[in-house]
Amino acid sequence: MLFKDSEYGANRFSIRGFLAAMFHPRTSPCDALGVFTRFNSKYDVEDWRRIVSASELSSQCQLEQVVHCKCTKNKEHEFLLFHFHHPIQQDAEAILVSDRISDPEGNINNNNGSPASRRTGIRSSRMVLPYCPIPPHDSIFATPYSVTRIPTYLSRTYGKFNYLTELHFTSVRPSALQLSVLLSVINKHLPVYDLYQYQCYWYAHTVWEALKRLFPDCFETEESAARSSCLGFTIDKADSVDAICEQYRTEWARVEEAERQFEEAKRRLVEAKIQREGVVRGTEEEARVRAELQPQIKIMRPMYMRY
Image (cartoon, rainbow, N blue to C red; front, side):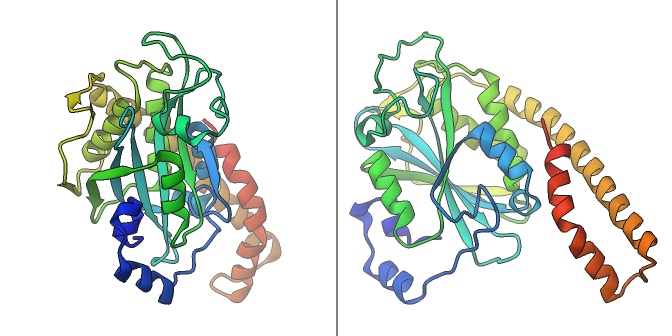
């Protein structure tokens, strides 16, 4: 984890954490697209699912914890931080940011990149009416690990904010592929931004509660009761967790079947080449054959993981 006091706001700066990060820097891999990246990357959740699904390495990244955050001003916008570990380089960590904002123009750039408008998720080039049928924008932001990248992005995007509570997964952790399927299901559940029911509070709450229910080997640390509230008042939101979990299970069964078909196709491909070349199993020649087929296998996977 990034040193905690600077991770969640400039007003919580820690000299000890800063020095530890400076003198013991981590190296971060950039081989798991959509999770461990070389550059700052922002995706809507549907694109993120396609990217993660297409990469075996990305899909295997493990979600260690989720942090629920809340802005301190304006509409007190809520967002989530996802902490992932790399499947091979276990000490490598990536922190992804996810939230829901209104998108009146139907694209990500309707706010012209303005931090002030982006913080609330409501200010924009057009007024957002409570029942105006506009699409929501559910997004994922990924960045290479560093001492400053995530704090800088959070500060510029959201201004001052507090972290409210953390959800830690223990022995059975969701994979990036499982999270991408869940976010996709939530996005499709009702693809309309409703200021009174399907807003940022609903999104953060639904992701949080669905993860707890679908992956119960976890524990929650609550530091504030301010979730799903604004100016001290509880915000109404739709109760969609049961329906979302059921839709997720149905969709995940489809993904598992696609994975099974892909693994079978990969096995047949390798087997055919081994037999064709008369390679003896368990030798360096077999390892060479498998390595030679990796580019072809990478091309095959997106064909099976389409949804």
